[in-house]
Length: 114
Length: 114
Image 1: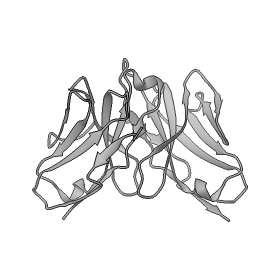
Image 2: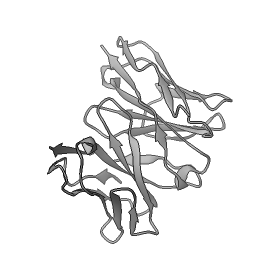
Image 3: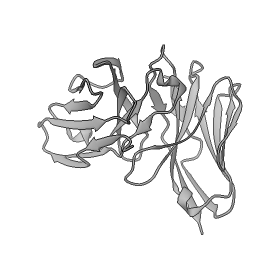
Image 4: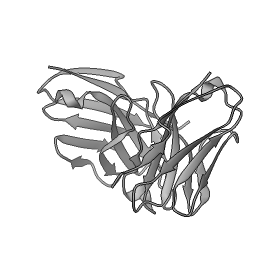
């Protein structure tokens, strides 16, 4: 069936380094993608999104890249900080008319070493 | 703006009982979606409400039901609780046509079935 998955379940980086979290999706009909950050005991927090008509989008310290050819999504975090430690989820959406729902992957745990 | 608020934050129920979880959407949002997140997993879509009607539903049994009120707040009801229903239940709100914008999540309700 259609699914969203992640290549790496855990990622450990040194403070100040750049982090790259990868995600594979299999539903070619997906047209909207979101990265969420979830800290322990909290709900998912929006980081950045990208529509399928774009290849790259930048935010503050974060960049999302979308490669539709290989159905791959990545989140790049520049100058990773201890506060970035969390589980990161990619989610895809098939906008059914104007009401879609999100399909989440299993998540990648990012651990930042000081 | 209080964002998305959920109540209660934690709940312990006995197998076979029924439970009701509540969600108030972010100001200006009229669409509410519910997700179930098992430990170590990504959130799984349960259903979505708009204009007081269930608009979409994920792969969850009829024991899971919901309601949306005229003020856009929503309830999730689960009947005949099973041990496997233990999870973090997340509510997300979004404006109409939310495929073009991110969904905001609440902190969740941690349900434990014993």
